[in-house]
Image (cartoon, rainbow, N blue to C red; front, side, top):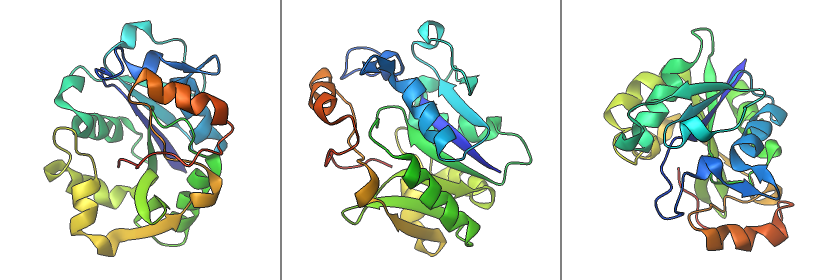
Length: 202
């Protein structure tokens, strides 16, 4: 059983409102990301909510996780989300709510790398690490010294490359993220997943 963890707690200051409330093709980004994880074989799926949590629509197929300290940044949301998962979950696939062109195939690929023995599996695009990222439970205690402010697992994985399996995903989607309304408008014509995308964040 590999869980899915969706980080969706930020205020979306550059966008002008929380991205958890933003829609693409008439569908909230948060529901799109839940479907991504579910279609990729993840269960259960937990969604970390913060800014705008009271306005979030129903989240079928997912467990909402309130994070009152969401303003502390991405790192605290990651730790909150991992802590919310059941004790028998051995690994979690992490994605961000603002990357709507990720593919369920990429989720399946990082899960397969874990099944093959990797403690951490990171999707790469043009050789650069992005999402989804799978974190085996054995690595979660290591994150406490790294997941600070708006930094998640990146620095831990930089320091511990021995833990990381890179999984090329250039052919199955895009890590393009939505930081502004203009970014969303650029994605609309290619929301079938064919965009080349922007640099990933992880």
